Image (tube, rainbow, N blue to C red; front, side, top):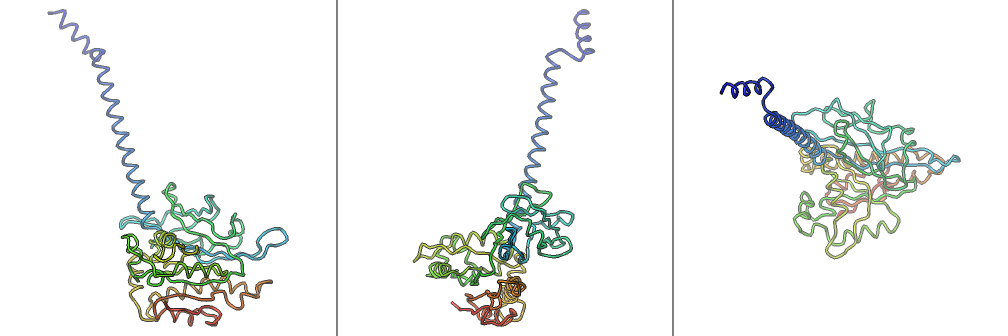
Length: 339
């Protein structure tokens, strides 16, 4: 008995038996492993939540970039563009004022970087919404559509996008409203299609396909919120009318720079001159027309003096007031057709 006690006491002083030490080590490893798993799960949850915010609460309007005729060095001459309207998603408790947004074009990083304001709308250093001509000239752009992506510094794996359309000075534009014009419902056109209803007016896809075939470029303008820009692009890409399998022609999408509630209030203001959808459309078309008009005096740009917005389609009486207030003479800018 004395020998047995002495042996047990020795084992205790030496840290227990070999089996006990191995068991303790195994339990410790399991605890560390569970801790690592918990940390990894928490990080994944934060990442997923960030991605969700960027996917569903962020958005950007498309950008139109005007290029001049090729110069003797093979470049595109002058370059100018419409505003970069970019909104970064947020929740009610977060602030992104210390973050920056990197701009990517066709999957490649650029030197352009935007800052995030108090309302989470973005701007370039100095407060502007457009990059400099030299910054545009350094971009490796394709004629026509280019893919824009925006990446918040704190969430490099989450991106949201838009389109950057490079056009020549000879482009002829036809403007088209979306809700109530392309779709049967003014406010719920996108929801109707999601629920399986025929959302498009009869003949609209065939009509605009014929307009595009005649050499005109479609420009889609909607008073929807910027946070729904990606879903609106999806609508334009998939919208079909029951009597025609043709798709809508591709083209830039310009929405408001507002979130859902302010944009909804704007949409419900139907009286002209009250800051409703017509005020937004006037400003949007002035931005587009201004890019072209600023180059009207350039060599080879005489066609710009006659205007580039040749026709428009809308469904409200206020849409007919838009061309009266866009600046240039209405016959050379926009002649709305109510459908």
